[in-house]
Image: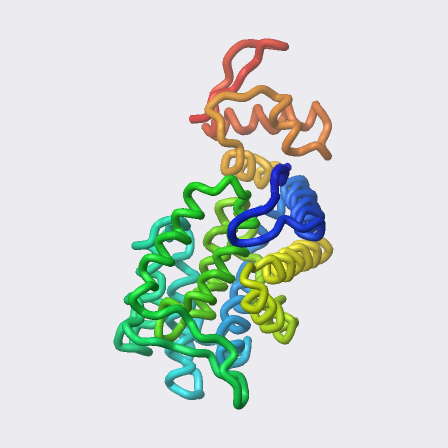
Length: 326
């Protein structure tokens, strides 16, 4: 289970008791995810959640396409709707399908993602803005972003934070999301990039985040989303936003666990172990630690079948038996 000790006062936020408690709860939920084999949910759930992620993130930005229409775009079926909205979905599908290729702490990868997300929608896709921008809510200016000449330096500082801070990745993802929104580095696409890149960071913590529709949870609490952004702007630190996003992550994980309990077959256990055990050699005890709901006899039969399938090789006998990944 991930450790979340040492979440204290940082330049970007204050280490409140709520942040510590939420981060601890998320760590426990990720332990449950691993214990119930949900790191990679079923293909049906993965597809449904990806559709929710794309539709929700774009809906927040004013896209009118429904989940059913996003599904049609995903399947290359004809969709009737505004061409701009359709192109936004096509671009987002491309980005989310390639999400594992992005390097969470590489600025060049970040710019490549923006280009892929906004190509055909803006003339400067993948490039920082060269003009000043402000965010208007109703008749009021809600936020004036830093001047264009300072954008590159601020974003580089943010990526330095990702690389060098001792904060855990869950916290880093929340801080990055807020600070990117504050800097507003692009003329357009900042909101969807903030949500996308938080997911890119979270995937480094646990593979389950690739298909966890955090964007859908934000959509259902959109008013609180903007309130947390505004409060953080006012306070000069993103503490309120970190607290909000941690609650979103916790709620998303809780729903996933409650909706999807998995019982694996022998072959599925073998594949799962091969994908998620990251050492070259192991003993039966390591296999049992990952699948703590099976007996020792079942583990022995599984491991024998793994040898027969060429997944690993066996060395020694009885208590000295070891296995080496092929």
